[in-house]
Length: 192
Image (cartoon, rainbow, N blue to C red):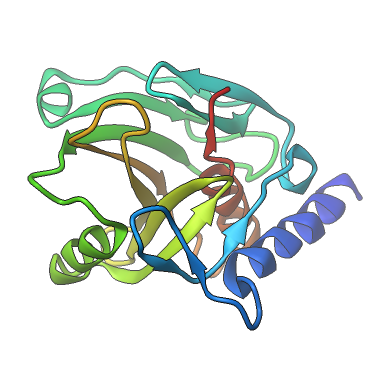
């Protein structure tokens, strides 16, 4: 019953993610229009979790069963600095490998969400959209072929960098996996 309630609450979160603000156009500080705003609460996640704070000025609400994973030298050189996984199974999705990763990259002169979205679209990613997640303007994207999706946003503290959060797998055909990934991504919140 608890899983069913969690899945139903996650569906409500997904509806909020897709809906946006009917009839109004939301514009973020850089002048880019976004399709909606999401205000995450812990109760919408289909899992028991805990907040993980990042010195970079944001936090994520991650499943309590997940554990920190190592980052290889090659991954670190590419900008990846945080990974957490369920080590192949957890109490929510069962026997399925799932995880989250966080990286940074030089913005290379990009200054607006519109420019960031255009870069992701030109790079062949799908489902590119612009949202306001808990006060942070983000670009959402997916790579169904490589089975990951994520959000990218300008570093909230250090100008000139883009932060990216990836969740894998996408959860195509598995509503619960999709809902867990959506909750992880939608939990992106500025750290106060």
